[in-house]
Length: 256
Image (cartoon, rainbow, N blue to C red; front, side):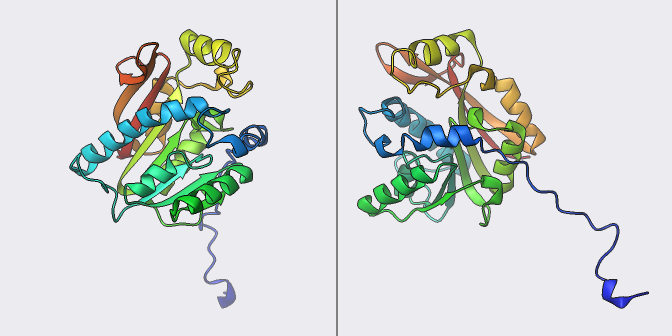
């Protein structure tokens, strides 16, 4: 036997590269919006209107998951958070203000540049990275978020698996995404994009996921869904959380 080969066995598994999830056309689309991301009346105005409701849900799930006090200003103190598809930092910055050590990752380098500039101006130390989440070289995170992202990736199942791989034992994952319904097509594409409320080409209805489909992807990645909440739009109240999942919804999950 050649002792130089003793450390190599035919039974040793061969690492399989993670399936790429970034779609270059999507990265280019959102990268072109980077300079206007923080303008509440610009091309990302809808995200600015949506963000407070998403944050309310995130905070509710944080307190429920870790038994926190809803009045605490820094419920994520001592914890690490990863925001995937972070854009220019609309969610990453509030997570940092909640006390987390935050990493934000996005497919568009232009978004990461805008995020870094804005965080620096706010005095926030956030680690921003451009690229694939599966390639991120970091220890697992206590909180992983991916808001309005999974409908834009090339392979939702691979993306869910990559998110699960970044989640620490005992951690919390939160996602949001549009539902694949006739209402979502009408509201988000025909009306919102048609009237210029959302940049044209932002959404592809065929890539929307139903709650059942998303739950199945998360289960296949070894996660257990602990909560599903509808995110609806009211002409009188704006975006609201509730039981209506026909437009958009949020999901919280943990390791099984």
